[in-house]
Length: 302
DNA sequence: AAAGCACCCTGTACGC
DNA sequence: TGCGTACAGGGTGCTT
Image (tube, rainbow, N blue to C red; front, side, top):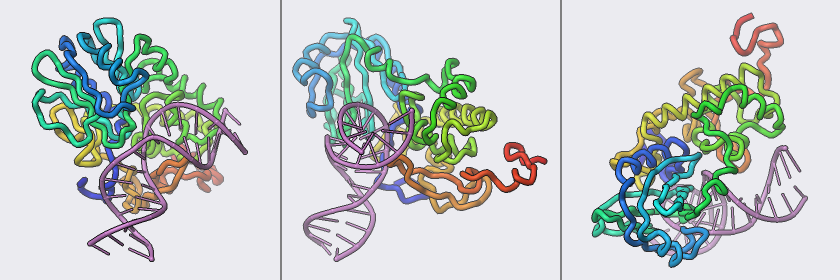
């Protein structure tokens, strides 16, 4: 049970920082290992092949690399195949001893040539193991990597001014930007002091710059903390330790508590069918009256 | 283009 | 206490 607030029913919801942490952990142990056999316990976890064909095609392939694109883990294989893994809500990847006890929510197992196994555990069964010889087909739909050099404030400006929708759902749209989920979208908007209901095309240049900086800073800080673990059963770092970003969340799951910047009480609303947390004082929807009197709302100076 | 909803799932909270 | 129902989440696909 996480300390500090009542969200025991929630899960890890792996976003970019959690997926990056998992990918780094796997990269340290999997490359060079050969998959000797595969067992699928929940057929719909594998795609697009049926379980038998999926298992047959993977057996004998050596893992050559582990990367990440957005929320996808990208596992390169020796025969030109790629295993794309999406953890969705509750997926976990564990490297464990071959003879270990099966988790209650085990959905697929990859036996390795060193006496260990890679276990895919997924309580809610939303996660997917996508085996393909053309990963670009899946990944081309994704927007830019927020931490790459390709994601610049200028590029963000260009994209935003052509969008009339609300900013929060846009941040969650993986075609627009790859890797943000509900937690880090809310945290980024708080840091940038932007209301989640603002229309994308109305953001000022200063707001866009703040948003760009906020997204990168929040994601980088979360990666440095090994991600966010909301629940005991959920996402873990490679060494089994929970991510440490939970205590650093400012708005997510903290409705009713004071904003650390201004002490106003944090609110929760629903935006695009997603719970959304923000500070009504730091992230006003209406222009502040101060501005009418000639005070710049960006700098708070006259 | 944008927004809403159903769907896929499960465990937990909550009302009766 | 026990039961049914609502609900959280990411992503896709469909409709308005």
